[in-house]
Image 1 (cartoon, rainbow, N blue to C red):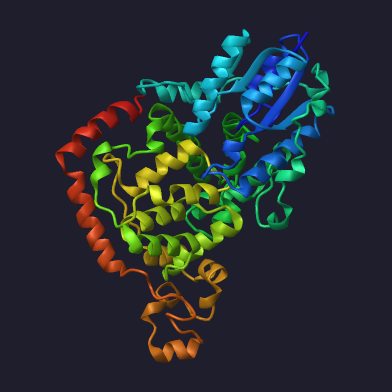
Image 2 (cartoon, rainbow, N blue to C red):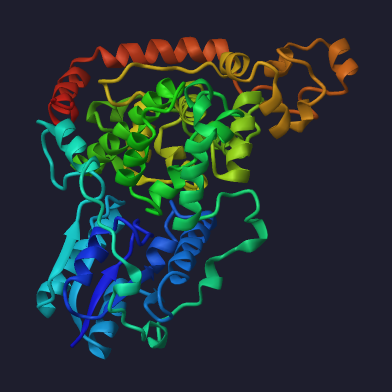
Length: 484
């Protein structure tokens, strides 16, 4: 008898795990399996912070099952699967569907072909409420509700017939290889245990101020759920989180925050579904007609991109957000949108110039949400409201005392609000008074915000009215708009 092999991907947990639940019913010993694939590890979207979070999650799983029941390998997936099959035999392969990048989709097609050739049944289970191959959204919202209120696929790990020889495969990798502990202190820790600590603290006290804090880059760090990374890597399922909301629905004085939080859970699957239905958006504009929109190039492109990537644009709120993201891997939604808007609208760069950079920085990088949101904020869908964020206004409204800016741009720590959000307005005497020289101690603005706003507004509205953009927009609406 061989093993029932549960292939872990972005579902690094033991509870509400449909693939594990099904494998335990097979009658064969169960082996959990994770593969660090070289092409994924080295991909432009992957960073040390991702690998560390994955490693922490795998360590947490290993602590809750018998030794040797989790096999972590390094190598090409087909080589590793072939090795397992030759040494112990694979009675069945079980996994969740991965709504991933082009390279993981191509990989999955190769695995499917290999399974067919080896006469191995591969059972895949949906991630959340995302429907594979969906082309229209008829009754999609009803489907979402049915899934989120459905059965939790839990197993009693003490009753599972575990396979215990996973440590003896010769492609076994020591997880210490991917821990990168030297810079771990400022990042959220991965794992199912940690995820439930975050959930419990959110519903105990942190989440009460959610609706009033989610747009603040400083307050959101405490009062937002902080579950995005745990959801992205599957330490918990969206269904578990939604049912936790329902369990807390009647908490006094929490309704506004719970309604706001629930709306985010709804659009989580919505945007991943958009990516699943049109995964080409990883490489091109959703609205193909925007491919010809003029963007800058040459030396100007390089200088602007580097300033944006490193947080040295001379625009305090932009720089603070980028530096915070570099250091912690977290940033609230509004400020993420502002970073993309600044890149594409004010700096006039193509969205593809920055999409992989932010993917590497976001600890919660989720391909479907990332690409769908990036293009929406870049204004290249043709169907969404055009938003050109003014970073000075965002700073004045969402960080009125300059607490967040001064924390991450200490060069400006002596400048009082609201001047800290536009230090280029300081006179020479004020610069002397506050002990700073703009252009030396802190960069002069890389662009003139008023001029860049006016130019971007004219360009985007002109482009959106074009006939080819309008025609493409009709196709997009037919594919992605939800019908209730």
